[in-house]
Length: 573
Image (cartoon, rainbow, N blue to C red; front, side, top):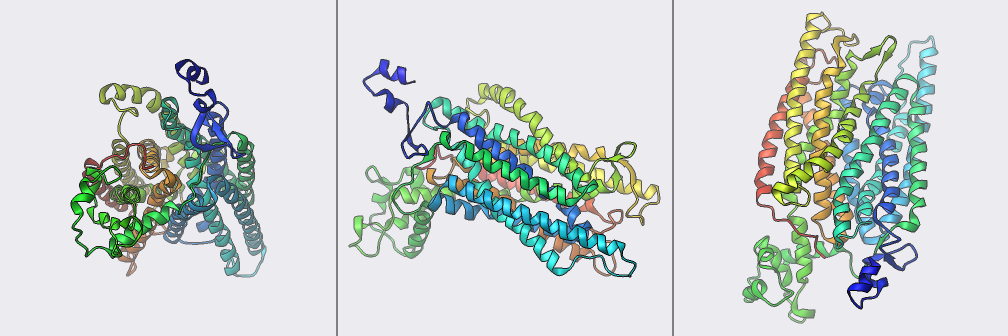
């Protein structure tokens, strides 16, 4: 590339090799030939794989720990899992704010990794205390409750939420920092950035599959101390791997001006202050010279244009906010209809690690004599389907679609998300039908009042719903990652990723609220509620049908807003 610069013009080879807006770890302008791209991204992806291995080693089987070691009911455990997952997915908003406005993505990842190790270490220690107490209780001849003490429960949840706080800094910055290693202004690196999200998900799912297949077995059949200790070791590996790539990374240059979050907040504040003002210069705002709002921008969310006005004519430039700041605010506000209509999809996904797992616990899980697969390991089918389908999607379907649509990515980001939402609703239909068959089988064999008996129905019946969940994630999850990264201002990439994650945080809270409401409505007066601890008397199929209907309504609403969405090409500078 530097040689091409010498041949094509007088531009310096060094300038040709320099990445605009990026520096290396020593503060020098980043050189294209020695920094960034896949060489640097591999370290970041490797650290992300180890982090996801650790995180899902806790999350995948958490409901069984709560109902087993801590003695909670199925509904209470499901609500606790959803609440914890919701907090884990919302905390990235805080991590993104800190990273983008203050310390940067690199330092945030390092600090979050250290906190991760501490949290997982304490979680392992809480499992040690829990195991000792349970062993002492079972060995005593006295009649007493084997429930853990309140201090033990509090210590466990403190450790668990410390992991959530650490994840809030790690998850939000990892993918954004990885995508930063590719220059969007370079045609070749721009293509590589688009593939980065696909292959990052591919690698993460390999880590998830290994985590779910190994750790869930260790937790169910060996002990929880080892099951929590291995994720702690994995996080140490993640930190070391990330630090190894320090010399290869590209770091975004932080501008010496107020933070982008503060700029956007100021736009909304000034627009609210000036909402009664009817400017005589409104025509100038819409049609003015370069630097004013584009025609399209001025017509959308016009109420924010009032942030350009001031009540005190002596203020600098006669404006409270600049045009670029108003455009930044509009670009973020434009995302919220898409964000809100994807919440039902998040509610649907929350079921895979709660009720799907409890279903599997009641079914025949034997592979050969004396070996039963852990119910939580079925989650690996989601990851395996992603691992198998991503290369097909990226290398076969995208080129074919590109020939028809002329889109560089084959289909648009919003089309990709819509396909994923549709697949998730089909998965719930299948889940409802399988659950109806499981209940019928339990009734035929007289197992309705035997909650601990194994229903003579192979657990492989659950595989199609897991696989469809995986396919939906290839489309919707990866599409959402790219969409929220690409459609925010350049300085808010971490916030964009955290907005994507917050969909699943809010969705988990909504799932928890929905479970509570249904449990209260259906479980009173001694009735068999939808979430009865005895799943053979529960009605999970009703819940799945309800979610499937909500999913289709959500999809229709999503398609309406997606139809009128206008893409922000290349982000707002």
